[in-house]
Image (cartoon, rainbow, N blue to C red; front, side, top):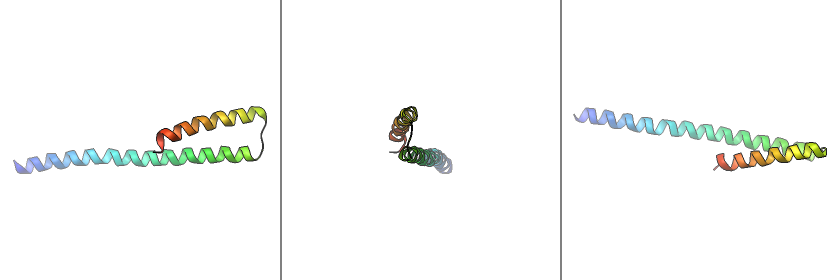
Length: 73
């Protein structure tokens, strides 16, 4: 009976820990990707742009910054 209890406990712990660490890796990768996109757009903005491009860049930055706020905590 004790062996069965240990097996159940270990199985529960393994399944509880594994998805969280995979989720953390995914969030870190998503966070890095969002930050890279923000840096790319900011670099484009430093090189000059038209009014339409500026509006598009600003919209993209707002969306990316909101996503960064949700993901990168």
